[in-house]
Length: 166
Image 1 (cartoon, rainbow, N blue to C red):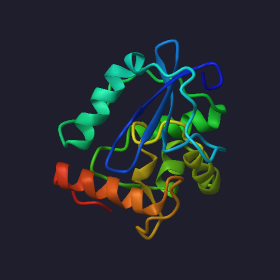
Image 2 (cartoon, rainbow, N blue to C red):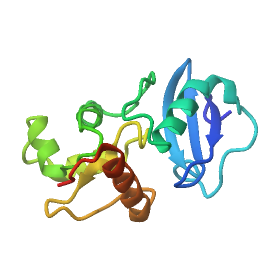
Image 3 (tube, one colour):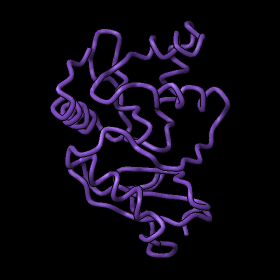
Image 4 (cartoon, helix red, strand yellow):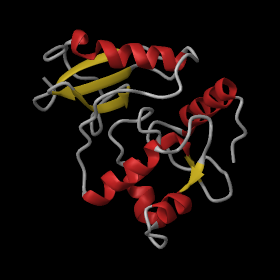
């Protein structure tokens, strides 16, 4: 087990995804490793069946067949972080927004840096689409799993949605 939760792994175009969950809800989605670790978890606690639905939805997402997710989430963070993550869930597939716009949406226009920090602590990447947040000039600033992966995800969504990004 990983910190008392079960986990699974899924190969994707951006690398191996590590899924963690507890009591039927997804608590984490990471690329290749857990935060603070240089390696994936051991086989202890691995239970792919618990994650059948999220694995299927992620596979459909990468195949261009899904633009939204229906996954129970258990997002643990401060009230401010959860507010930011909720705002991220409302950024449409195939579009981007800025840290400043998220700060305005949550009625904290001066909290741009705090929004960036909360975005960076998002435990469920892709499903809570932190990759859709860009710099005020449209640049691909910051992504915990690498700017090249962020660029891939944005291009994938742009092609699937036929949307024009900011």
